[in-house]
Amino acid sequence: MKPVLALVGRPNVGKSTLFNRLTKSRDAIVADYAGLTRDRHYGQGKQGKHEYIVIDTGGFEPDASSGIYKEMAKQTQQAVAEADVVIFVVDGRAGLSAQDHDIAKYLRKIGKPCLLVANKAEGMREGIQLSEFYELGLGEVLAISAAHGQGIRGLVDLALEPLHLPEDPEESEVDASVIKLAVAGRPNVGKSTLINTWLGEERLVAFDMPGTTRDAISVPFERQGQKFELVDTAGLRRKGKVFEAIEKFSVVKTLQAIESANVVLLLLDAEQGVTDQDAHIAGFALESGRAMVLAVNKWDAVDDYQRQLVQRSIETRLPFLSFANMHFISAKKRQGLGPVWNSIVKAHKSAMCKMSTPILTRLLLEAVQFQSPQRGGMFRPKLRYAHQGGMNPPVIVIHGNSLEHVTESYKRFLEGRFRKAFDLSGTPLRIEMKTSTNPYADKESS
Image 1 (cartoon, rainbow, N blue to C red):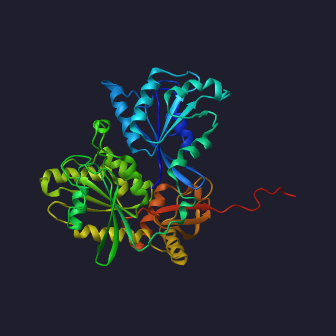
Image 2: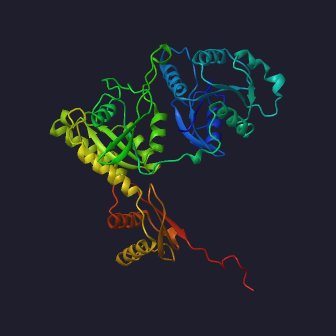
Image 3: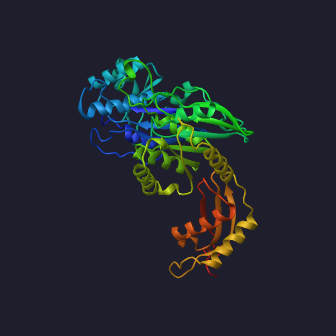
């Protein structure tokens, strides 16, 4: 699992700038305005061989009792609960504030590994000008400049140091015969109930309250000779005053489980239809290239009219999952579960499909003969041959000339032909275009 770093601090200390620097992106909106970030933002970064997840949070006021600041505090508390290491960002130029003391008191009480980082410290002398931050009782103060990129590499090294990550994370052996299945979905859609039904025992705590599952739980399972590893991704629920008011859904655990899985079973709730959270989970699984199966749970609890509404909402809100097989089930009453297994195995087989170059090239030329790509400017794209560029998800690389003019609609046409020929279902299929370069283009005429 990737380690998780959470950025916390009062408003306008540069957390979002640091987030963009750590993730090498521009995902977080940055402006010289306090309180711009309100929700949690998740991003992925990499230093050397180690990958990590970063959480950007809004301005933190631990004692806020009402309004938007209370909601922002909940978001930050959730991020701290999900994190392996907390990075407490203070403003090196503005100096120490009473709010910094409040945040430090909260972090000391949590007891998680914490780094104290003084941002905007370009050109400052650490020993003298940053000495006041030692009052917070969080150890050494690391001076950085997120805007200028100073001290960022050292910050990541220090953050990952207490986690004792392996030197070469790629060397872990994986049993290719085992299908890793992540059961994902919103809280209280019946994920734990479904896995308990499969296992025939109360292996996971199932309770009619969102967020009963506190972590991603892995369970080995075998069915008809095929070995599976079931991962129940769900919410965060811990007893104690610190976590009572926290949103009981761990986004990080779901992202980590989806990334490490071969197949994702997205569980929807027939009583509530498709929500924004469902669409976000589905979108992340698609970006990760994971094979997918859709299952609509609690199908026995709705009438015909509600069933029509659910099917329509899936068609309109999740059109990008048209490749995934869909099933209507009842985990509690054990209805419709058999076909789900067939789709999971089929999706995994499709994701790991091997496609030979001669067959791909023949299918490509037949498709071009049936329907040529549109002309782009003076030239019509010429598609010459294709080969497989990867698995899980399958990637088909097409070579030719002027391929930058191939339209998205024509790529979908080719995808349909390839899917039908190889009987691919349940997995995304990516098509990459590589235009041949003219070796004489850069040579001057003699």
